[in-house]
Structure formats: C-alpha cells, structure tokens
Length: 415
Image 1: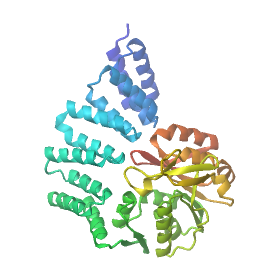
Image 2 (image 1 turned 135 degrees about the horizontal axis):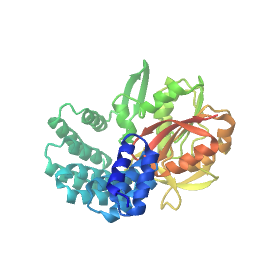
Image 3 (image 1 turned 90 degrees about the vertical axis):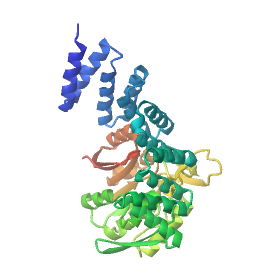
C-alpha cells in the first residue's frame, strides 16, 4: 500500500527543486489512491498556474474547494486567480468568505472586494467596503487613496482631493497619493495640460479624468507602460520602423513611437470618437508629423462586419470595448488588419480589450509576409488561445509584462 504522506513529501521536494514534471506525476498517482487529497490538488493547481494555464489551475483549486471550503490558503488562491481572470463575482464571493474565516486580515480583503466592485461600475458598494476598511484601520492611507480614486470616476473632485490629502497626512511619503492629488488639483483648476521631458524630448499630454490609468502616469512625468515601450525600443531591430498601433487610445504609445523611437510612420487604429479626438489633439500638441490617420474609425477583428461600442463600467476610456447587441452603443465598422494595411510594416502593437485573438486571426497574411515583432495585450483567460496562435504562426514569446488581469507579450518570429 502506498504511503501517501511519504509520496506527497517526495513530490513537494521535487516541486521546490523545480522538477515539476516529476512532481506532477506523483501528485496524479496520489489522487488515483485518494481523489480527495486536497494538498495534491492545490499543488497541481500551482504547477498549472506557473505554466500560465490559469483555467486548468482554477479547475484544480475549485475541486479542492468542493472538498475543503474552509481552507484559507486555497481560498486566497481562488480569490486571486478569479480576479485575474476577470471573474469578479466569483472573486468577491471568495474574498467575502476569507473575511469570515480570517477577520484579522479583513483590511486587505475589503480592499480587493472594493477594487472588484469598481471594475464592475458598482461604485457605491465599493465605497462601502473601502469605508469598512477605514473602520478597521483608521490609519490606512491606502483606503483613503482607493476612495479618492473612486470619487474621481464619479467626478466628485473636491471629495477626492480631501481623501488624497488624508492619505498624505497619514503617510507624507506616499508618492502615489501625491501624484493623484496633483491630477485632481489640475482638473479643479482647469489646468489640463501636463508637460515633461523624456530623454531631452519635450512631451505634452492633456488630462481629462476619464482615462485614469494612462493619465496618472503622464501626470507623474512618464509614459504609461514605460517598461514595455523601452523594451520595444531596445529590442526592435528595424531602425525608423513602420508601426501599426491597434487600440491607439489617446496616443501615449504613439507619441513615444513617433518622437522617442523616431518611427518612419505610425499608423494608429482606434474606433471611439471621443478617444480619436483626444488622440488627434496629442498628435497636434506634440508636433508629430510621421502619422497616417487614414485608418481611424475602424474596429479590428477576424472578419469584416459591424459591432458596437461598449463603455467600460469603471468609466476609463482606455478600457472601452466593442461587442455585439450593446444597447444604445454606437455602431462600428469592423475590418481585418489584412484588409486595412497594404504596406510593409515592422511592428504591431495590439491592445483591444479582450478581442485580441480575433484581431490576430485577421492579420495572419500580414504577419506571414512581413513577420513584424509585436506587443500584444492578452486577457488572462485567453492565454491558452494566444499560445495556440503563436504556434500556428511560428512566433515565440520574448518577454511578458504581467499586469494582473492581463499580460503584455512581446513576441517575434521564431524562424
């Protein structure tokens, strides 16, 4: 008879040594003897999660949860992974269960519940949880920060300013609150222009309070996703490249491509009228001339057709999507990249809020002919399909930038 405990310890040792295939084999054998061995299920989930196979990992965790619903470590794994997969209602349920079982850590759990509710546009419920966090810990400058962020989304700027000020009273060195306070002050004063120098190049952006993820980086004196942008500049072999910017948003990446990388041409693709207006403004105030604006107004997909604009519940313009059957959504013409682009290109950036697999499928000819390097934002629940795409077009991942609910992959042809 197999000594399950001894076998488990052997597998655990192998797992810690990075011998994952051997460990996985032992865990599976343990489950053949005891299908309810929770620790083996959890560790198999961890191995799958380490491979980026989040759906498979979640299945292991959920099966373990069906056996042991009060396992705190397991609940934490489930809460985190469902939040990353944008399964927010499930994540909230797991965080709430953790509050019941581990009330001494409720401050952290309330924060995660609040953040999930914000992403669903359930602002008043989110505010309630952030307030609960303050009841537990009145000195939580992070809770004041979270409340301030939420209030900006509701256009309650004076109240937001008060929250950021409270965060700084508690922690005067809290740099994040300083930047957010600067953003709110500018909006209140109508000073919408921010300027900074990057590598001795003057850069300007206009802030609106409607594109917070991007604008807070700009207010802090930097480009949004600077790590990715620097990696592109350092690794792209083409000098003065032609770049296609799919999901150009308001032009953060475009300005970097045009002014810092000195691209021969940048071709932005964006479908949202309000975003397009801001994009053109940023092109103008940064005196960018190497841009082809003829592809604006289109959505990118697997086939030609039509779709509709879907505003994000959190009210961030950079999170806007397109989808079918959107009530009161403005219609958008969807085309394939193969149809839209008829010239040699060196690089493609793809940021299309969950429709990246369709966008890539509609660009297979372009990718096959010119083999451009790419930066692709991939929702974590699409990573398996993305890897299948890479294999089909013979591309490989060079570097991954993990941002929680999505990953930016820098990929190149593997031939």
